[in-house]
Image 1 (tube, rainbow, N blue to C red):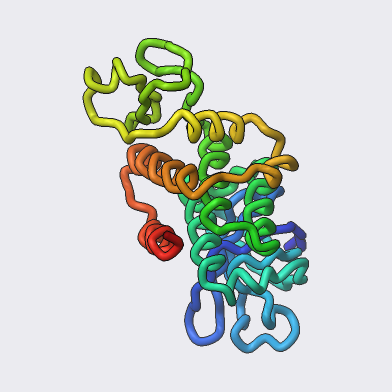
Image 2: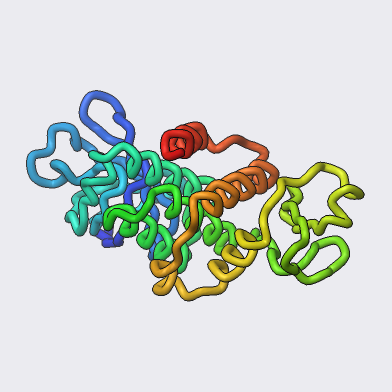
Length: 254
């Protein structure tokens, strides 16, 4: 069986049996992949202190013969991102980011742009960027990368361009609704200020390398997280498990 090598960021790890570990990671070459690391809990060389959530690895593996788990033979640590496991707000944010990747990607469907976005998210947290701000920007960009980018520069019902002094809401289906249309649509919408709309619209278009320069006010962050969460609930029809921890971070920062 051929040995293969791929770069990947660990999303989740679970124990399997007495000595093995099941590892899910996202790779620019492989996409979202789950593998088994035999003897990982006893390993003193191949895997020791490497198979940790949010670690960036070079992984030596054997692909499965059919649909099944990859066989992880060895891992080389590229970056441990230790503070994401040792600092609670960063850990919550990294868990949220990882869960969004798990929800919005498919097995064996690689997208180098999604990997770059994931790496931007964990690096931003490691550098000390506001965890909630990082989550808001990451959530916005993963929606676009997955093909669900909301249109935020005009009303999705009448087509009117966003203007200062007007009231807007984001419909649960992802369409923006102006003040005139909000009362006529079914399903409800969440209020959003023009300032937040314009910021998010800019954040959708800016190059990833320049995303680091953008800064949100606390109000922008709170509004952004709320509307993106409700839109995501509509898309997935399933709650994001780490959302309650994100809400708790919001409340503690007020």
